[in-house]
Length: 158
Image (tube, rainbow, N blue to C red; front, side):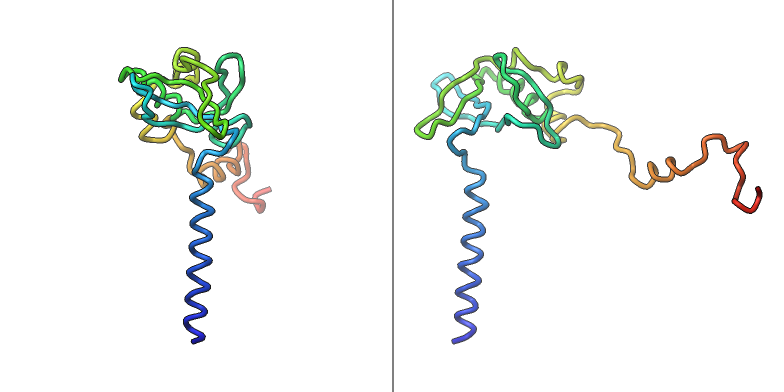
């Protein structure tokens, strides 16, 4: 009996946690997305864009309004247009989507962000590929004396 109660309680907790996670992925009223649609206005895909700065996002301007996006979002926009799909910035008003900016691909490109890589590579890497500095190498370099010729090898040499 005790085991059944524990199992039931655990199942309820897992179900409620997974429901909360799933709800965070569902667009909410007020969310802004770049949405791709085909010639028949059928949804193809979307990327969320933000009105506030966060880590990993870059500031862009669509229709004279500032937004924060991932570089992969800009790359995806370019690829969708290459495939002849219509891409717009749209606002979720709760009972459907309201377009607020047309042709974002003409307003911001990867080159505008200083990225010269192919958009497919940017999407695959979820951003531009950069030479990542290894943490310990950076720490070691920070503690190396600037002029090793004049520096004492240890504090005993002084």
